Image 1 (tube, helix red, strand yellow):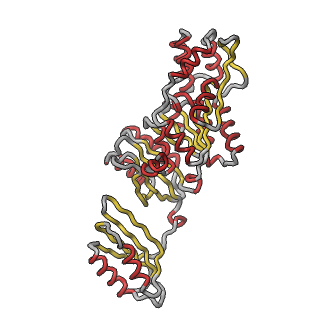
Image 2 (image 1 turned 90 degrees about the horizontal axis):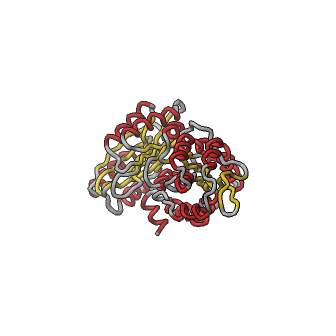
Image 3 (image 1 turned 180 degrees about the vertical axis):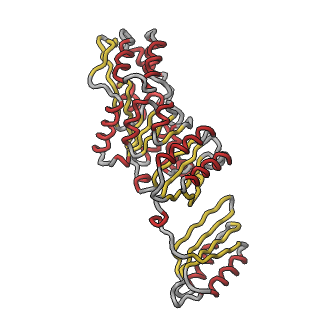
Length: 398
């Protein structure tokens, strides 16, 4: 056997001492070097891959491979070896991406559809990891692709196949910034909480149907937000502060919202809520959840009643994006380190400005324009996009 690079692959039942045995034999061969290594265990079945460099003149090739074959057999493992031309580094493979799949249960059809889209875009799966325990609810694919890859087209195609299979698919460039996120900015209505506060206030004011129609038009981008806010708030004239307190007491949090904030805080993230709703509610949410920042529109009150007007600058879509940038700057963070989460058209500027913008159970227009769309019921499912596994999350909250 001539010298060079040899790829050794061992498969079989996992047991203690496999790596110790094999690496000891390699170490005993003068001139032999391990250039790459990877090991995975699935249901107690192991795959160990070693890239050996036997190009040194002192390396004894045939005896080493023979010894490794003998040891593998004693350990109950199957060993294959292949001569390769060169070490493949990430730069030689092209850019790397992380594709995250989320569903109540990821089906074989879902995996097949995603894999086919990747093939059509000349992207290659290099590693597959399961992030959930028990059922197959979240899978992370490490994918390599050449500079030719049209990332927007890939995301659009994955969104289309995922929609038909009740499967969420998120694509991120694998880089230091994916693992260095430090600020999470959330919308309030229908994101952090499950209701549109203004609709609840309008119901108490006897104008529920009229305001709900305006809200729907605004969230779908059919109506200017500032105009819609003015029209809706006018319907609240005469409503008492006690009515606002009643709405807050009965606010239903989005499943996983409390868990998301608690885990983020333990991991050292800064958190913010930026809402086109009202400060009366965001300030209370900030106190209850321990959020670092809270911004929203201010309702004018006189003698304990709403006047039907707002005070100060309006927090619309562009204002949300500017506030996100201001918070990031004050924390000394780049926008690549920011995650933004929202559901409405007025969240799109904010989602577009953040390093990772997530449309959460969003309206159709928002789903189409946002880079990442998540339709899972739990807001804490977003943590999987940071590469955190269910086991790691359990350790954080324990």
